[in-house]
Length: 296
Image (cartoon, rainbow, N blue to C red; front, side, top):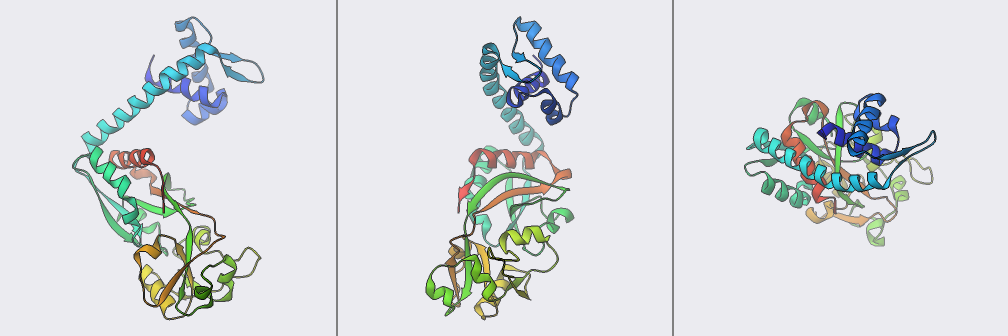
């Protein structure tokens, strides 16, 4: 059985739909049908029960799926490691991170360095006001950004971390005394204006334009970098929501980090330029997927 035929069989076994399988693999529906018919002739038994309304695995098909899936996954992992070792060995990937987020990725990076000796990751700080610029200019190879990211020229990879949010407020702020914050508190003051360098949908997933009750969240003063945000908060000019991990790395004497109890968790994922999908990036992505997301 050729590798492509195995891929067609396993995808059809998952989708149970010839059209979706063809679309997912970017082949014709006839190619899917031919591959399955070829294997059924070879085996001498049906792998799928087909009717006009449904497609289902036969008992022989289910057993074949179980046997092939493990072998296919091992083969793909081996090919990925060989490709990365042969073409990406010794390559240092430039990873864009916001603030101190790189410290949270130690499990992923330790696994990457262990799997691919000689390869490494170098951190480059990116700012919330321009999260995609470094990817598009080639300054970074892959960035770690909160979701959603819906840019046609960028690919979103596996989630590497999940966690809540805190509200950075100046010492003496009523929220600091209360010890807990809500998204409604954002409408009682100002949050930082990060400028036009990031799409509104992305900024709003961290800093909403309106509270759950529909109140407008005022923006301003302007800031670009993480340190500028902290300086403005400490000066009492604004409050600002941040990822929860920020509280662990920034013990600022003029700031209190208060948990936002009702905010949904943020998901952080690897993002890279679609046209720059090289072996080293694929190796990092596979490693991150295998390690899985960490809790911030």
